[in-house]
Length: 259
Image (cartoon, rainbow, N blue to C red; front, side):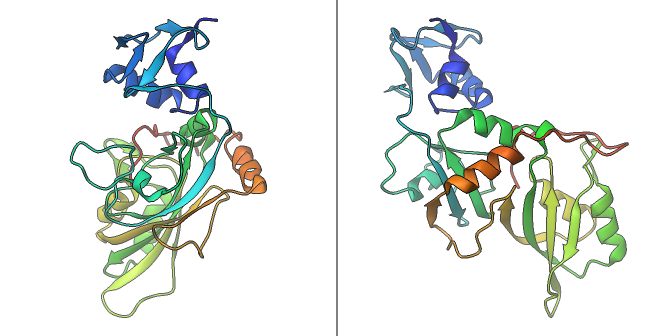
């Protein structure tokens, strides 16, 4: 049966449909030996030789869901043109073709989901579902209540105000720094860093501590574990809900999300 390449790659767990479009546009996908760049191209997964980066695409034997605590100094991608370490390098012993869901900056630490479930990945990154991400940001200076309220109401970035966020001051540090816990429901490039900078408190260190219902304080940096079946069910539930932005706020897309 002829299907769009984006759907084939998503069903095979290679990438979400959006990410599959990027793979196709960059010439990394071939069908029966011919490189394909045109969106909407169809193929028969049962008869055609479909490859990504030279590796044949087959339906996954099983879906895998891995929670990784990303340390600083790794890029959130399968491969990097600059040959920097990637999060995939941390998944020693994993043979399946997995990919990270969303992105964390090179210098940002914290929880990252890695999977071969393309449909779930697409839902988790789509703004209409508004799956929460919580971060702990060590910022310069001491934010006052006015700063916190500005962050909660939303900050204009690139001509659009961010959606309302949950912001709380964590146990105060002594000296000239404080830690904020910031929970957002959208994804813009370096959003948490840019929000804090906009109120005059640049981020010194950033760590993601929760993805939807997923939280694990015991998972050490650089380590990973499989999600439990109950965690996968809760994650699917979170990715199924449809949220509406607050009045006056504009939803932002989540492509290429970085913090």
